[in-house]
Image: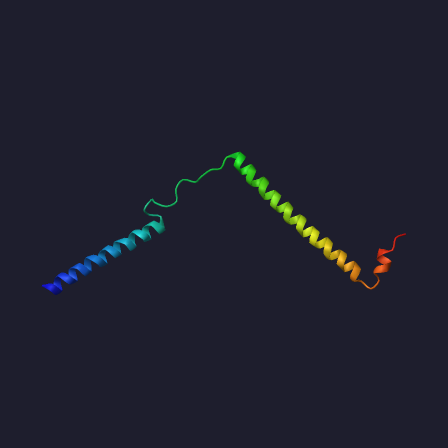
Length: 90
């Protein structure tokens, strides 16, 4: 009798774990209705602020890239052996 009751309790524990796993799988598959809700909408002004901030980030990146290119070009001119002819003022 003791062995039988131990097996029954083990079976009930395993059944609970199985139910938990099944519910997790359903949630991940989207069958349970829980999960992704209604899509949130941004107002026009919020979208405009986000777009303005992104344009500012792009401009900053372009400016940094241009400055780095200008510095590299200046270094290249001074590194040339015939730089005196390039730097001569007329």
